[in-house]
Length: 337
Ligand code: KG4
Ligand code: ZN
Image (tube, rainbow, N blue to C red; front, side, top):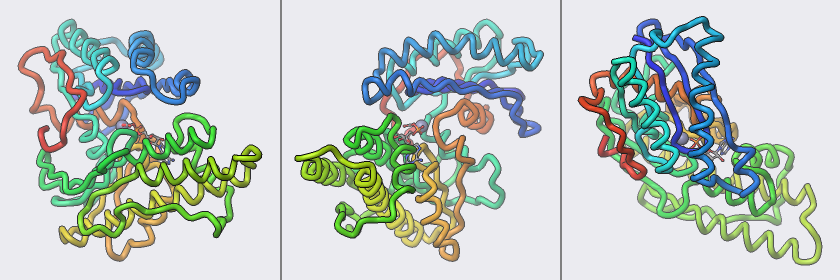
């Protein structure tokens, strides 16, 4: 079964044609609007929606032509139904349902965060239920107990900002580009550490599995104000702030993930979502290899992409819509998939 995945929940237009039977990616394409949104320091939903409309059809046509394929190569369509930005989601939903109607093939609505989570299984052997997943993106910071396919229990989450959002906002404060995560990581790698800088690790030692990142962001804001009172921040100070911010944020994620595995007596930890592309997070968790078995997708499949939607669609073929489902679900808990 060849499934076309369509991802438009935020600012990446992602498509992929995936053959579930042979576990083969036939083609994939990603158009990132990041440069456009960089001008505004974050995603502008209306612009994102307009751009998805402009990109989707040419992207699909180009890929079909390049691969010498016709539309009949597509046997089913999976699209992101939510959570995400309403306008951008509507574009993907309208496109997917129209194609499904024209080609008379099934259409499968997908939960974006579930697709991130499932993607960690793409080339992972030996991942058995139940397991724990740390799902970290621009909109979510979740610790999820995956009991069986489709059965999720959210056992920890952020009380305020998502960790990706904290990376993005910190990058903005430091006048680095958008998205902020990769920029912060690059700058942090240039720092040797500066002992005079220390940021809080909110809720790191709380008994629960929750997070809080807004205090950390505020601490960075005050530090930036203090250090730039008389002169602009030097490159090396920016690197040091990025380093210490990353240390603090990642320490919180690592500590609560390990706590979750221990509490739930799970050895398997799945890491996914955009922030899972962060090498420091991966390396810090790898250091606990004796306690846990770590699974994560290839770096390019951590951030939003079309393949994760196609791949999740294949796992969920049984859940195809009975009728066309153009409604989207901008807010959608994993517990209600
Ligand atoms: O999953 P994703 O592509 O989109 C959402 O579903 O939100 O995640 C995007 C988020 C952004 O906040 C971005 O800054 C963050 O993931 N991110 C990173 C890295 N790469 C992307 N955060 C930290 N380190 C990275 N290398
Ligand atoms: Zn995402």
